[in-house]
Length: 157
Image (cartoon, rainbow, N blue to C red):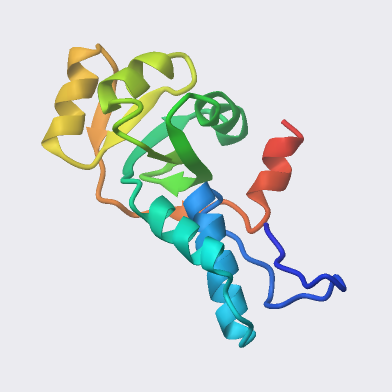
């Protein structure tokens, strides 16, 4: 959870949860300033544009405990954000990652031991999992978040 506050420590907007990547937080700051009818500094607008140019892809992994899985997978170089939830009857961690920093195949290999199964969105992800010898199943994209305060749980894992 993130709170965007004034210098006087009053909330500009209600708390924000969701995308905790650098780009997501900067976009939330810009949106909050606009909602509060406050000027957006030029540097912040430019930073938002630069960070929005970062492309990301999604990977989802099933495991016995998403708190420990998120801690393991979230620290890999190239992972931009993570969130825990439920999909296909499994506890899962959804990652957003920069494919210019880590490929899906390398993410699978580096995260081996953190998850039980890869949930794949397309044939490319399925092929990468199979070639790495990782259990995988096709996934319909449905996702239910685990909690409003999942970063609190992560901090205490």
